[in-house]
Image (tube, rainbow, N blue to C red; front, side):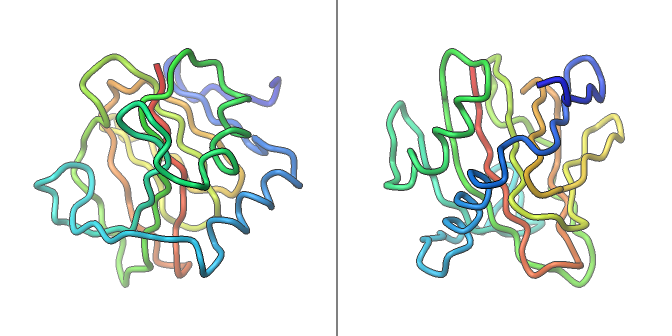
Amino acid sequence: MDSWKSVQINMKVIPNFLDQETFNKIKMCVLNNSFPWYFSPTTGHDNDFSDFLFSHYLYKEDKQCSQFFNYIITPLISRLNCNYLVRAKANLYTRKHKQIKTSFHVDLHDKHTVALFSINTNNGYTLFENGKKIPSVENQMLIFDGSLSHASVSQTDASIRVNINMDLM
């Protein structure tokens, strides 16, 4: 874990988070044409219609809600220091003609940590209110204080942007 690069005190970017074999298995799972994606007309929060996405909940309301949970989340969570998984979901954004920034938001209002794992590299990114941009880079984990307001910015160079979003306590 020496490769963790601290972006600021309450944010870390970890390149090559998983070994290549484990990463490839997860990537092939979520990019497989039989992986179920569900349309969401809002992003960030329920009133944000700036963009749309497709998602797949893996864990919510204190239970696994996907047959893919162990395949995707277990290898990720085993490398993170957390006591409690609150929520986990896969997100898929489609390519846009221009970059769209969703509204700034926090995932939960309780004290928590966000772990955002990128499945593919593209010019989309996570934007923080302080102006810091963290690009989507394949096999990269972004860990940050859940009280940091952030937004998702869509990509224009790849057909999809896929990440795994985990809220931890």
